[in-house]
Structures are given as C-alpha cells and as structure tokens.
Image 1: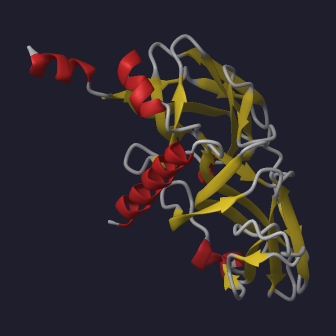
Image 2 (image 1 turned 45 degrees about the vertical axis):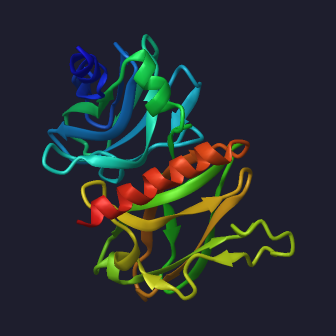
Image 3 (image 1 turned 30 degrees about the horizontal axis):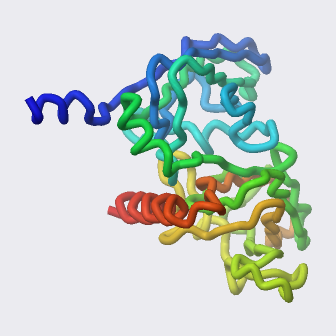
Length: 291
C-alpha cells in the first residue's frame, strides 16, 4: 500500500498541447488552454509549415508575459522540436484551472499552421507544494524591439531593462542573427555586462561587471532553442537592473540584425533555502544539457 501511494503521488510526464493555429500570410493568431492539473512547465516543442514566425506566452494566473515585458521573440529562440525540445533552466509552476495563452505572428509571407506543445510534469496538490514551491518560475528577457540593428563596421551598446521586481538568475542564451550578406554569426562580436554587478557592490559603476571579460564572436556564445548555449553555473542579476550588450559589426558592407533571449529563473530573495534549491536545479540542468 505504501508503495502504491508513492507511485500515485510521483510526478508524471505530461504534454499539454495548444490547439493548432492557422495564420494567414503575415497574420496574427493566438490559442489558449486551461491547465487541467498542477503542472511543472519545463519545456516547449512545436511544429509549423513555415519556420518564420514570432511567439510570446501569457501566464494569466500571474498576469505575466514570457518573455517579460510583453515582447515577441523569433520561434527558433524558444520553440524546440519533438527530437530536440527546448528545456527551461528552471521550471515554472502552472496551477490547476489557470489559463495560459500563446500569441503568434507569421513572418514568412505564406499561410502558416502552427502547433505549440508545453512539456513538463503533472504533480498532485501535495507533490506540487514540494516540487513547485522552490520555483518562483522560469522567465526570460529579450530586446525591447524584435531586433537590434548593428550598422556595418560599427560599435553599438544595447540594453535590456530588467523591469521585474525580483532577482533573477540567467541560465541559457538563444538568439537569431540576420544579414543581407556574408555569415553574420561569424562577423558579429558581443560582450555581455551587468552594470549593477552580481556582487551587489554599490561601488560598481555603469561600466559594470563584465560577464565576458573580452568580446566574443556571436557563434561562440549564442545557441538556438534546439541547442541553447548553457551557462554552466547560473549568473544572478538584481531586480530593476539591466543586461548590457556591446556589439561590434565586423562586416564592412552589411548591417546585422540580432535578437537575443536570456533564459533563467526567478530567485526568492527573502528565502535563502528556496533560492539555493533553485540554483541547485539550474546547475543540474546545465550539467545534464552538456551530456
């Protein structure tokens, strides 16, 4: 009987699909669904008749967009496949009977049928408290516009305001880079900075704490949803801070457009024990991804 009770209360793998959305050429659409049971949302897969579309999610229970700030991202930065799902650095707990929505816009100029599937674990009420409580939840941050345009042969500094009221740990990085010529991923240098300094040192100035101590080529630092670039140890950013990215376009003739998505998890500042459990989860996720 004890064994049976244990098995019944174990978290169980669960897929939660949205209904298929048929987008007209350059058109917009959305789908919503009610969460049937407490669900640890851990990743995303999807399929479409064209890969060119943008996407964002809305957690109605928390009145929160993903990515933060009601911003779209390119599908290849967040939507994996059945063979290579996109996994979050930290799960997000969705409560029974809450509504979650997905918003889509076609970029291909062709009719586009899209289905998005949420991947995770079904948890009962008791296990949900045990498994879900440590995770204030997955959240991501991206450009305030869909792309930053870095002019040919130029240096540019871009900022992502951390508009949330919570501390946050960066766990993985995906992006999309585009140009009318050449190989933009090999011709774009970037350097990530934390102006506030993860050390919470008040003496840190706007020059900030460098995540990269020297510029790196885009292709060495940024992945896509099916193969994210994982931080092998979460990097904490303070609430109300910002991510600063310095770019240098090495292409003398072509502008480069770039979309970056920083994925991570919220940190419960007032509960060190839960913060540690969140960080431990993210560490294990990064090590597992490397195998």
